[in-house]
Amino acid sequence: MIEISDTAPDVDVHPGEYARLLGYPRGWVLGERARELADGARDWYARHGHPWVYARQAGGLRIGDDTIVIDGVAFRSTRLRNTLHAAGAHSAILVAASAGPELEQEAQVRWREEKPDEYFFLEMYGSAVVEHLVMMTGARLCAWADADGSAVLPHYSPGYPEWTIEEQPSLLELIGRARRGAIPLELLESGMLRPKKSLLAVFGVTRHTDRVRRLTDLSPCENCSFVACQYRRSPYRRAHHASDPEVAAMTGDAAGEAAPLEQDASYSVSLKALQRWSEERLSIATRTDGTVDAVFRYEGTTCTNTGRPLQFHYHVTLGPRDEGYPIREQSCGPAPGDEGHTSMCRYITHREQLMTSIDRERPLNGQPLDDVVRWTRPASPAGCYCEPESRRHKWGLVLETIHYTLARQPDRPGSPAGLGTGRS
Image 1 (cartoon, rainbow, N blue to C red):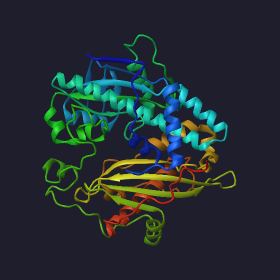
Image 2 (cartoon, helix red, strand yellow; image 1 turned 90 degrees about the horizontal axis):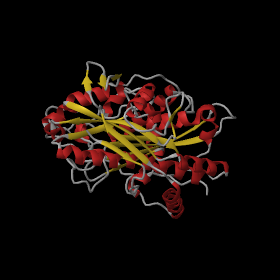
Image 3 (cartoon, helix red, strand yellow; image 1 turned 180 degrees about the vertical axis):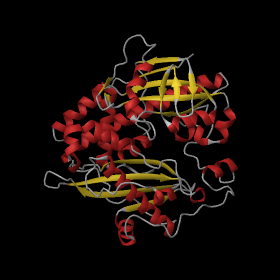
Image 4 (cartoon, helix red, strand yellow; image 1 turned 30 degrees about the horizontal axis):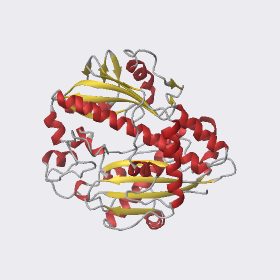
């Protein structure tokens, strides 16, 4: 049994990971002002932040037909259940990690001082810290599992797709059962955590290491940026090999051949609109390994407060064309310097809940891009982000624009335009 309680973990956030969370594409070089803000957030946290991590191995794991039962507590997450089942998991590690309350408090001070740039860079650094803590905890668990002849699976958390946030209280109570002293996290009525830069997670453990090696969807390595890890089983963000029959089956391409996008797709909006958005709002870049980075700039208005303009950036990373462009990474957040989103009615009344929901929503993640043309979702053209239906509607438009563009111009070059840091 393994237990980790670290109240002073080392925090060394990789600059590339921080830049990704800030909304910049891969390889982007920060300008002078952005570098000043990024360094300022990092330096402030190094002096004042108090991160911590707690992890323990569960005493029992049972995988049912539609639930998983950990130490007698049942959870309903189809994706986590399927991952554990596919890997033949025999155990689970329960993890709580937090960047601490100090950064959140300081970010609010910067906001009240009308310094939105400083606020935004601190907020995103907090997110980067939590990702780093979970990554390094995963590395420690990999070392422990390797010595035991086992392998650790990707972590999963309440609030992710196919795991309702309503089960967060049960997971928090379960994690803290064996700990001396309460876990320093507060649960809000919404299920969100305070401090908000915190995360609860479950890592599966399996002795069937051959499955992890053959199917990278069962390995945390591809999404782990700890490149120095000696227990790495696959490269960071490695493209799948289409010649692998099991991977080809997972992408719906049993012959291992290219899986081009549907050319005559039926979109939810007119082709004229998609063409205009493709030219004016979308930037696409293809990496040497065939993966695709896309940035979409959304411009809308709030539904109240005299219709204040707002701007959000969508970042999407797709696998190579010969895999059917599987959706690997997604993020959405206010454009650097945007202030209009703060006038949304739901932001004013439930700011933490709204922004956490926007940050965590990743519709169709892991699925081929072609699935967007068959995705049934409500039509909700409201310009704001207050309701889930409105956010899904916007994600659909973004993914349809990317689909439209790649189906017609698969190798279109481009670099994101209009991505500034906002006013200083």
